[in-house]
Image 1 (cartoon, rainbow, N blue to C red):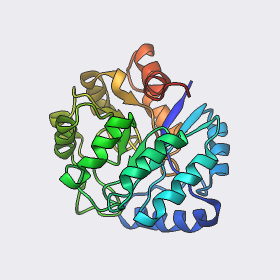
Image 2: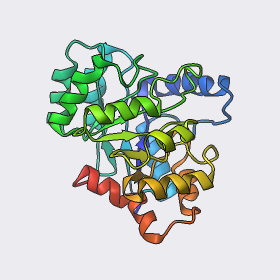
Image 3: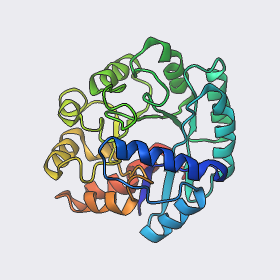
Length: 268
């Protein structure tokens, strides 16, 4: 079984425009990645079927405070047996805490925060009420972690920042995308490995060496690693092959590919 814990899609009306803009940002930052879907939910589902992926977690992002309600309504609408949806809040929204309550009531399974697109540093105190509320509600929080193509000169969620959040909020379930910090993996090993945090494999293939990936997984524990792609920027098949080819045991791979996700999400 395969559960891709990190995918993105957009409402049909804006998908083409959103993908074009994001793809240009990725290209301008020197990455050679091209979108592997057209950004719609239907195309994501088509590709998951093609790749043999059983389920995926969809992670929407509100880039403006005014977007959070409509995006969460949309996430609820598109959620289906194959697509498990998280919600989103914007740190500058006056009703962010109320929206977290609504996310819980809608049955969305967690919260996606993107420090780069939402203009905050992960360990800023103004985020503490959001973290505290998520912990109270039992909502896992997944962060974009490490370098992002949109602002390559400023990392808004470094491993050191993440470690401070973990220390301050021990009851908060935290997932750090991109194996704890895209392009910051030495610091991941220094500050995060062994702590009570999940790391996802999104965008690791072709960027993180297999040797360092195995070292991080073994030292951190395979029970805290989640298979993920960051589709549409990497296909689920690309990340699956990357993990499959690592010299890990069958039991470790089962944990990464689906067992950890089931334990974290409950009934999927």
